[in-house]
Length: 280
Image (tube, rainbow, N blue to C red):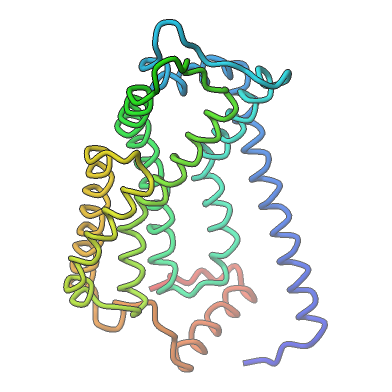
């Protein structure tokens, strides 16, 4: 093992900063391209987003724009947020490409699948919110409106409201990944989480109560998926524990011998790029 000089450390830092800049630029370009493709359809997309509320509005009611610039700024803000959401796989890929060279082989085996599954679950949470939760929420709100009160929701406030729900349900659907990571990092075990199942179910209903209107149906519709996703995370952890060797079941700290061996292999690859070494 060679001792890295101060000059080499500075060069390495500059190289990492340049790589980070390039990845951020590529990420921004991807978001901007999707934004430009979506912008011509901003009004149609907003109409689709507002459909769960419009279906439950009385015939005499409609959505309104309070601010002068809202008819333009609100759809623009919506497509900008949508562009970021749609480019999550591209953003995570850029993140993966930046951190992958600094990861050890046993870490790389887990990070990429976790990033991919997190994206898929986040999208599923958003779809669940739009197709299941929104109709129930807006149906409840319009039914409990006092007599003599006309429901005319501002388009900007509606966007803020649904954005919060999208994020809340997207994060809630990350329960399997969180459960899996807690087990694989050794923070807890499958047995302990299984023993705490009753507490998790209660917590799921509390979350459902906080994120949905005060009616039993919508609360149950959120609590049950969170509970089932928790069970899915436990099942994934059990399967991985059975199929992997005991030494590879957790994100563990490498021994000095393992670290030296892998660093020597990396140095050999960097010093002799023409020497193709197959990674085990």
